[in-house]
Length: 144
Image 1 (cartoon, rainbow, N blue to C red):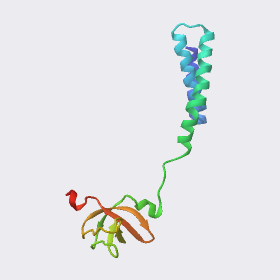
Image 2: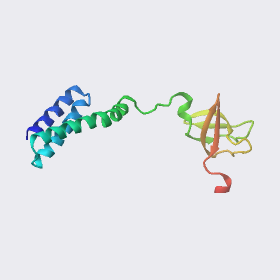
Image 3: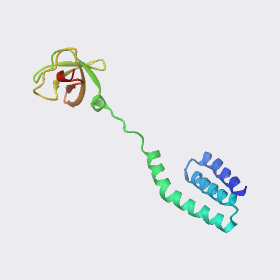
Image 4: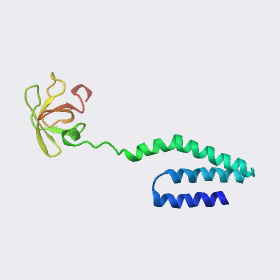
């Protein structure tokens, strides 16, 4: 029961400190409690605690800290438009075309320069080149 009390104390301290280190030591204390539940002597319990603590700090801590410190990538500006769905307002060919992307009108041309995309076709934005969206139809005419 002492190991469980130590684990609980470290868990409460982790809530205040929010460093992750105390939580990992609490898990290691639970490993010591598991060895105590098996009836092993205090030396083996302490050895199990130490080995667990070192492994958790060396293996788990770097991975979790990396995920805690780096958030998901945030796309902003025109990069947020890549992959969005758009609707063609005019026929989109190599030299001309207009699409509506999220309520905004953009000049457009097909990603495949030999393709002509008819008006009112749902397309996907592949790239932005200056003020022009490079688009490709969701379904090609031969796939319909």
